[in-house]
Image 1 (tube, rainbow, N blue to C red):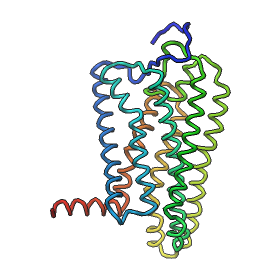
Image 2 (tube, rainbow, N blue to C red; image 1 turned 120 degrees about the horizontal axis):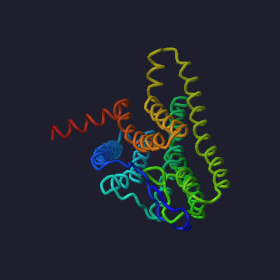
Image 3 (cartoon, rainbow, N blue to C red; image 1 turned 90 degrees about the horizontal axis):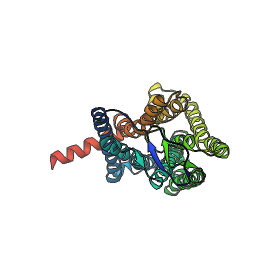
Image 4 (cartoon, rainbow, N blue to C red; image 1 turned 180 degrees about the vertical axis):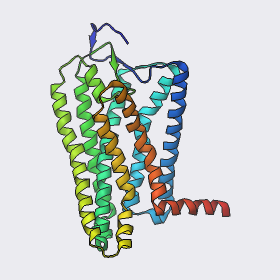
Length: 309
């Protein structure tokens, strides 16, 4: 899109690129995204319902999983409905308030997911390394205390970044070279010096991104050390398999994030951004449904009860 970059304003409107294709291609993309959105909502709502309805699943591990599913629903709902609207109408323009709100929520939910995955790793560490004291250590209050700082820090970080973006200068109709109001795309669209914002984002990424990933690695290093001390191979496999779903989710989440960071072109970045936004929330319930015996047991029990009824 060509625009004259002469009129500057602090409250512009934004032109999100999304997928500038033909009407027929946009319709295909719309149907694919709608299907992904429905699968994501259905899968995560199923996980939430099972955990709430089954007393057997009222444990710290499933408390965190229920929060993860809730978070994933909010995460995809921040971006995909607007993308579907763009594909349906061809209207790529987004208001200043909508763009800032979308960026704020996306940053918040992304940050919370980093901390939540860390809390889940800590839960597995306590369960395997201190099994006799698990119930005492991972009490309800401890679970809540692990989540509260995550949300608080995520809100604070997103607020600071939004304040930085609010003080940048943009042209009247600024190009956002992504399918949603991504922080990197907004920084590139600004006419202002973003050195201080870049510095803050780097420091925040070290704290919110690198620190949780290091804690996850440390937790699993201790878990592996404990598992290797188990003499029975069946016992080792049974113990470590309780972490398999969480490990898979961590690999998908951080793998998609690192791939996005290393993208070299605009087309790659948009496609990888879409994968990052949709793949992780969609796969989470599938991974836990297929690889977790308690979840599969709860699903079969509900189906059997329905048939019996």
